[in-house]
Image (cartoon, rainbow, N blue to C red; front, side, top):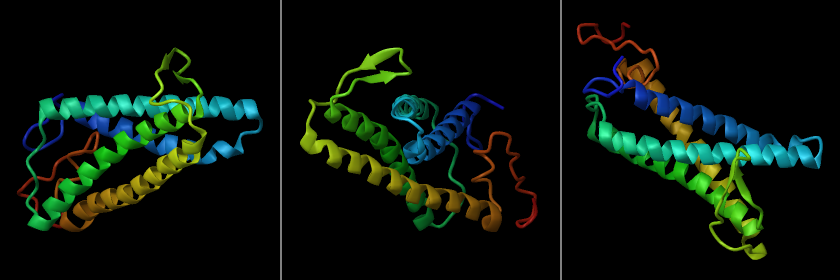
Length: 192
């Protein structure tokens, strides 16, 4: 498998970014939801610090992925009705916006609480604003609502990928799978 994408398939670097970011987002989202189950205040502080560090890592990986995508390009689009191609572009744009906005909103929320933001206890990051108790609940709400919007969009994204695989029998899903074999054009539709 090539590092670079070609007309038919995503390259291994693009696949790496896609799946590592996806797993980090899913894991960190679940982790964020379970944070209230911490047994002690200290455990919750440690879990919150880990949640923030993973979120910052996602932010960095997304920025690197965007740079790589700009440099690498993308495979040609599979034949589909125009509305589906437009919907796919819109969903991908919304996904990128959300996976950038969620860690940034968490960073903002942390900033208005006035607490330091560390990345895996290695170094501090600057605040995105001054401490502001009036914005604390609002900024936390923004962070949570963006997360739930991402969940909704991800359900659509995964559903569309499965639709392409199960009903359309095309390569949309296969070409992003880590070890996906592409369907040959000589293979009749409905057979894989």
